[in-house]
Image (tube, rainbow, N blue to C red; front, side, top):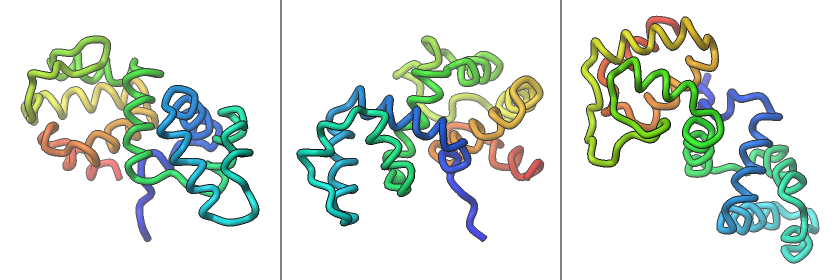
Length: 159
């Protein structure tokens, strides 16, 4: 059995909200989603789809699982840095990582903290945020494992 990406474990309404945000704020994303819907077949015309409101287009994208792994990464970054940064801010603060409202300082290079700080921050995050923290931790472990030593072992202990 394959393990779904952290993005795919989000409820459908949250995935739609993320894709809606992406479409509304990134023209390239809109064009990419339109192209994927058209490529599926079914009679959709690109000019018609481009006129759809972001929410309607997002529902179609999510309904047919047309998000790519690259889209998923961008959507999860948007979730944890732009839209709902509280979990990332709490984790970075607890791990002692410099950041600006949840964005890691660009001059920092991985690893961002030692294994002890990562484990302690992860444990506190799960206590505070529960399953949302688990999803966040799986996300950063999947996309940036080198930045967070010991996180993979921490996650495997509760999976």
